[in-house]
Image 1 (cartoon, rainbow, N blue to C red):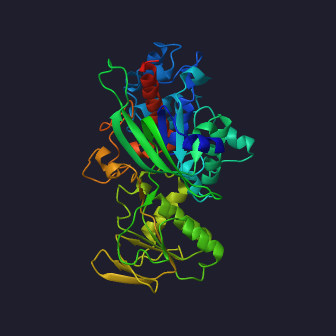
Image 2: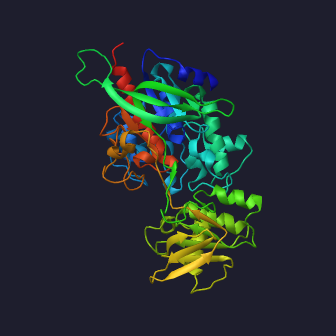
Image 3: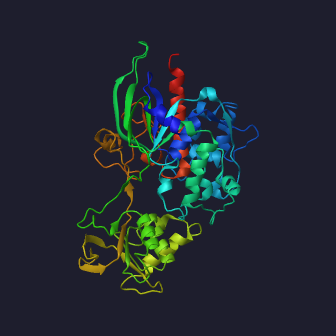
Length: 477
């Protein structure tokens, strides 16, 4: 990848066709498709959905990238709102939601003539934020659902002599799998690690054939390269298309209350791991305060319980709120999370239960943190409670950091008047190309477009690759 750094800093006479910002699963999958790897339906394959099978049989021998994605995905239903995400998932995992094990109906051909030159810029190693997650944590999704095209996780783990835990993989294994995927598929020349993008600007369309009625704007992508043994090196790229694939884990959500900047208040689970290893928190310490009612908070509870650390677990929702993630997960698939939910329900100040060392504070609002490690809450009745704690983890979600875009990217959202949110207010994109409805040539995929699971981000890559290949094919020679 060092040659890619040189290539990045070199001057260019022509703009790059595509720059992808973000090197997590979304960016990796798109790079795979743009590198000429092309999906076809196997000739011997029969899809278990009769309607989809009939549509596929109408275009035998035609790549999925060249077919009408709107037509193919019409009528599909599943655990995602994106029609193309459902389509690609149905092709790769035909009946997985029904417990079946029908193999993928796709076969992959390497057709270099279809490749679209591109660069993938990422702060971390390929795999993105997966390298920042505590390695022993298991994935929410089944291990098989974390896989990318044409390399199943179970096959990779078998070669590494690793195994799944209750059908799920550890975050460390998945990060390693993504890094290996880039190498094994020959994608490394397209990836630049340690690349921090600071600005993306769009300007005048590039000079082109006068007969083109709707010329495309050019983008200027600027930033710097980080290195352990070198000073930061600035770069500036010109591109015809930019794909946003940064995910949403860059900026941790904050409570915005007094004392949140004190040194014992943290916003990442890794802080608890560091404190445990250093011995600064022990079973004899004051309790750890975990704030939040999502899966990250549950992971922190499980981690603390494993090391017998006393825990106060505070959250603003009611335990039986239908919007609580625990009320949406099948108990048989996620027993450990339902154990945490049971603890949240049963172990409170008014209702002692067998879970010694754990205290649940539902519907409590944090008011402030004090320098002497005291924390102050407002309880459901409007009164105040004060607790002494050793360490605080505020795990209430994260927001995308698109500060490199004009206006922080808010004008690209479905509701430009509200903050960007992967769940409530994603970037507004065309559902069959993932191109921004507000800016031609700008694409968004993965959580930025509302696809929050690795299993479904790959459909976005299919849609983007199909759109970009068609654009490049229409360009004059």
